[in-house]
Length: 200
Image (cartoon, rainbow, N blue to C red; front, side, top):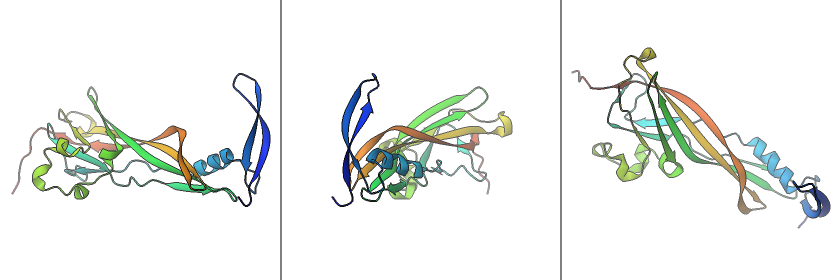
């Protein structure tokens, strides 16, 4: 493979014992491990941005005991590359979103995996009659059990925590998993009411 060399180096095991290994080095003298770390440092997955149905933003409220659909507005993975003779690409992948609704003496939690959160209402192709039964469609949804009246500002706080994992490829081979994950969070105010007064 053009531009690549193989070098024998000494590594130290966690036990303290030394072992001789052969590593692949690109034109700049960096190993695959170094290229993975370099590419990984360039990948910064976004904070969660939620879409909901019904839309509870901009003065809209959640009705207690009814489902609120939740999805990610921008679940697109990020990719960065590094290397010269060796091309290493690192990609972030959204694994799940954890949702935690809190008040002064009230907490509820939900967890939605990647198949549930990376879909929008429009992508599901559902009708307005379907929104009360999100379980049928394996979609992420939450159900608020009580009103937020009496909370500061009469609002609960919904914290969304997006868990991102990482993989890498080497000259197109892979993907291979990178240990560990990154959690990005964002907070959303939620107004929950017990009944709806319809105005003409």
